[in-house]
Length: 178
Image 1 (spheres, one colour):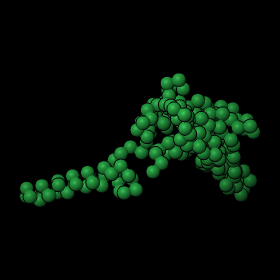
Image 2 (cartoon, rainbow, N blue to C red):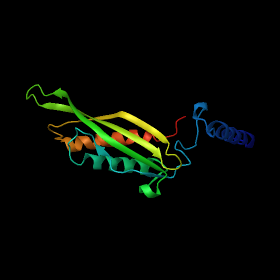
Image 3 (cartoon, rainbow, N blue to C red):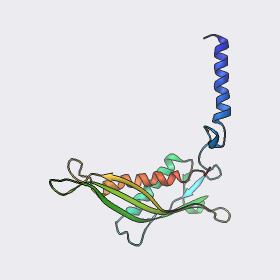
Image 4 (cartoon, rainbow, N blue to C red):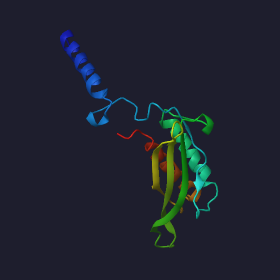
């Protein structure tokens, strides 16, 4: 490759980066700008609550832990206590539903079970008037688990995947609305 071709290639790549990839509006092409709000630095996440008819123990702690880990891993936000936070993420686990997807025809036992988690959550700005940034009701996430041989997964293992999926979906909602 001669110098002229190399210079033209570099110029073309540079132009593409600065015109297409640097556009702050993602509806107009690719962007390298963060999808999260630049004015928010910290978020408080108190322990999620259990709904009126949900009696399983420790599910609120497990979901809260999954959400906090996901925020720390995937966003620029730092999880802090409420007194130092810019925003507050609160939630309630309304229901956990289990549905048998398939049965073993020889034994009649469940071969595969779907676990659905239904959550209400609110993300509120603590600065100023306390504007609600995101409010979702009956927000759902699901996963499947196999309770029989060879996996022998129980509710605890099956719910870990469902809580992880719910945490991912909640954190997706924290991105800027374009």
